[in-house]
Amino acid sequence: MGGFLGVNQNWIVNFLILFGHPKAVSLNAADPTIQLDSFFTFKNLDYFNDMKKIMVFGASTSRNSINKRLAYFAAGLLENVSLELLDLNDFDMPIYSIDKEHENGIPEPALRFKEIVKQSDGIIISFAEHNGSYSAAFKNIFDWISRIEKSTWEAKPMLLMAASPGGRGGRGVLDAATARMPFNDGKVVATFSLPFFGKNFEDGRGVTAPDLLDNLRTALNQFETVVHSAVEVD
Ligand SMILES: Cc1cc2nc3c(=O)[nH]c(=O)nc-3n(C[C@H](O)[C@H](O)[C@H](O)COP(=O)(O)O)c2cc1C
Image (tube, rainbow, N blue to C red; front, top):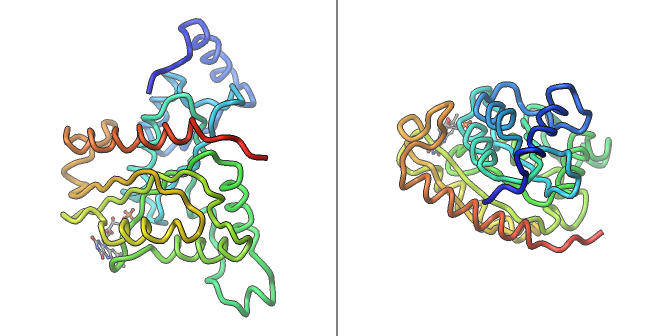
């Protein structure tokens, strides 16, 4: 995960961000880890438009979602990529039913979400586990976007993760998603599970347990190797 920007380039990019270059990625102000990381190392910029674009979200609508925090932290460890940090609250839509689909078509938030999938070179998701499975919010988006085109996830490389307050680390939903995504044209290249979130994660530091951080870095390496080796198909 080596950087490619030299000191002078970093300085120029720093200047562009601080003075409002339009292509500077806007990062989620609610996440101090990402914001600091990006402002002081300038890793996650859209300035160089050949950078790979990574779509990142916690599959949860909780305001203080542990999975959103994990997903953003993990994405912040990648270098030389442009991050699209999403909040599922921005994709609120009716609960899927075939009748609603026939009456009103696909809702605008689903079309918007699907377009971001298309534009991405890789996808990082951290799943909240609800009763052993997806959160209703994620399942709803998944159902709607699966109705737009045959290929739901557009063969994009995926890093799938899950965090939970308890000891199973969201294993139920992580296993379910890992098994399911290939049927919807998702290319799962790595997974990571974070148990005991309260003990193993700190705001501002991220994953604190060394063995778990090692696992996460291994998963990120696998993911970025595939992302950077992917051939662009227009
Ligand atoms: C409806 C509901 C069902 C849940 N089911 C599970 C479960 O099956 N297994 C588990 O480990 N945690 C379960 N939890 C606890 C969640 O893992 C916990 O709320 C976690 O913070 C959710 O992730 P988030 O903060 O990203 O939304 C459940 C929580 C809710 C609200």
